[in-house]
Every structure is written in C-alpha cells, then in structure tokens.
Amino acid sequence: MRKFYTTLMVLLLSSTVLFADELSDAYNKEYTFLKAQKAELQSRLTKEKAQQAADLAKAKAKAKTSQDAYLNLSETLKAKQEQLAKIKEKIDDKKDNAEITGSVVIQAKSTLETYGIAMDESNQTTDIQRMEQAFSDALALYTKLSSIQTKKGKFYLPNGSIAQGDIVKVGNIAAYGIAQEAAGALAPAGNGEYKLWNAVGSADDAKALFAKEMRPDLNIFVYENLDKEVEYQKEKTMDDTLKAGGVIGYVILALGAFGLLLLLVRVFVLLGAGSSVDKITGIVVEKVKNGEGDSALDAIKNFDGSTARVIKATLRNIRRGREHIEDIIMENILNEQSKIDRFGNFVLVIAAVAPLLGLLGTVTGMIATFDVITEYGTGDPKLLSGGISEALVTTEFGLIVAIPLLLIGNMLSGWAQNIKDSMEHSALHIVNIFQKHSTK
Image (tube, rainbow, N blue to C red):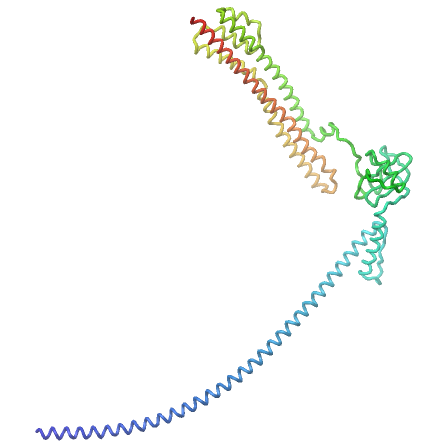
C-alpha cells in the first residue's frame, strides 16, 4: 500500500514537471512576441511625434505670418480711420466757418444798413470778401461815431417849441444843442429827434464842445438810441408819493392820522387822571396825621381826576375793616381803569393793522405789475412803474404809521400803569396812616 502511494506521488510530480516546462516555453514565446510589438510601437510613436512636431512648427509659422499680416492691416486701418476723421473734422469746420461767416455777414449787413451803408450783394463776391468789407466799413463807422461831430439841426425846448441851431454829437451816445433860445445837453424825443434836457449846468459844456474845447468834467445825458422818448427829469413831490400809494396808501395814512389823534386824546386823558397825585396825597396825609381825618374829604373836594375820585372813595370808607376798604380801593381803581386805558388798545390795533395793509398794497401792486407784463411784456419799464410804486410805497406808509403808534402807544400804556399803581399806593398809604393814628 505504501508503495502504491509512493508510485502515485512520483507520477504526479513527473506530470507536474512536464506541465511546467510547457508553460515556460509558452511564456517565453509570448514574451518574445510582445517585446517585438513594443519595439514596433515605440518606433511608430517616435515617428508620429516627429511628424507632429514638424506639423506644429509649420502651423506656428503660418499663424505668426497671419498675425503679422493682421497687425499690419489693423495699423493701416487705424491710420486710414484717423485720416478720415481729420478729413471729416475739416469738412465740419469748413461748414461751421461758412455758417459763421454767413451769420456775421447777415448781422453786419443789418447793422450797417441802419447807418446807410450798403454791402455788395453780387454773386461775384464771396462771404469772406463781404465780411472783410463789413469790417472795413465798421472800422470807418466806428472812427466816425467815436469822434465829436457838429451839424445843423433842430431840437425841442421844454415848452414844446422847436429851436433851430447846431447839434454837437459826442460819438453816438450823447449830443448837445446850441441855439439862440437855449443851449445844453440833449435827450431823445422819439423818432430820431432831440429835446433839450431840463437839467441845469450843461449850457457851458455845449458851447465848449462846439468851440472844440475839452473840459475836465461834462454834464452829459447818455442815451442808447433815439427811438424812444425820455421823460424830463423832475423832483418827486409828496403828492406824487401819495398818488403812487393808491387807495390803500390813503387808507393807511388816514388810519395813521386817526391813530395820532387818539394818542393826543389819550395824553390829555392821562394828564387829567394823574394830575395833582402828590398834592392830594400830601393834603390828606397831613390832615390824618393832625387828627383831622374827617375834614380831609372836604379839603380835596375841589380836586378832580381819577386819583382824586379813588382817594375820596377811600376816605368815605376809611373807618371800615381793612379787607373791606382794600376791596373798595381796588373796585374804584378798576372803575377808573376803563377811562385811563381809553383808546390804548385801539391805537395798538391800528399799529398792527397798518403793516398788514402795507402788505396788501404790496400784493395788489405786484398783481398789477404782472397783469401789465402779461399784456404788454417787459419792453417798456415805464409800464411797470405804477404797480411797483404801489407795492413799495404802501409798505413804506404802513411802517411809517406803525412804528410811531406802536412806540408811543406802549409808552402811554406804561404811563397809564404808573398812574394806576400810584393811585393804589396813595390810597393804601392813607389807610395805613389813618389806622396807625386811630389806634393811639
């Protein structure tokens, strides 16, 4: 049995060795084949890399050539665009210059025509030539207008009559007239005519300029043109100011006069209320100190006024209790207060209303001004002067009325309060002295 297993093991080992040899031969063959394949693949890879490197180099060279060509084209295009922009700018400048030149020519034509200078309108002259002609004519005109010229002419006198004489023009902004009737500075009378300005002191200047003599100072009237008439210079009177204020101005002044009248009446009332305070108090105190309190009332019976009435009421009730007599004193002072404060509050009301009326006049004046502007525009300032005058003058009137009424009214209110304080003080002083002497 042992031999059998031994023989079996020998057979197995023998078969295993034979199989291993076959596997080794097969492996060697496969290895040799794979090695040959690897070598072939490496050779092909090397060739492919070389081919790709060559192709990449050619592509880079071609891309570089294309890029250089693109950059050259871009630079050329940019240069052409700059040239085109400059050409377009020159064309626009020429158009603008042509328009400016044409506009200057039109303006020069309209300006020079007012002085009787005509420009060449033929097709043979260009705008540049017309403009050069306009500048030449304007220079000659400027030289003429900036000089002093003398010519025969007429001008109106302040009374409306016409004076024939010499007109001395100072450039194109001022003129003087010299005639047998009068001489002096001239102002526009409308429609290109002159009138003698009514301001004094220019006759000697007119004669000096006519004689070609230059003076260090001139009384001159400078004007812009002769188309619109200039009003004569005149002093503004109080009547003109009152008229400028309109109806509201008259109302404010009437209230102011009424307020001043009330202040005057109030002064007389306060003078009567506070009259003889010290004298009455001295008489009563002297009588009380001498033990003649019963005769004190007879001693002041001829005195009148608020203070006298309060002290008389005090003496009539002086023997009553302290609280009762103090109530009587306060009651009589309150009774006199309505007389002492008479018209005081009304004056202060007028002082407060006057500026409000002035403001109302300002509003109505501005409304009138805007109505004129809506209808006639702003070409003539004279049309606006009425509304503006009313707007300003009424405010002025309101302040003129309010300030003194407010100031004097408050001063009189303080005076009235002092009178009431003095009445109370005198009455209580008499009561204190009487009670002091009556207890002895």
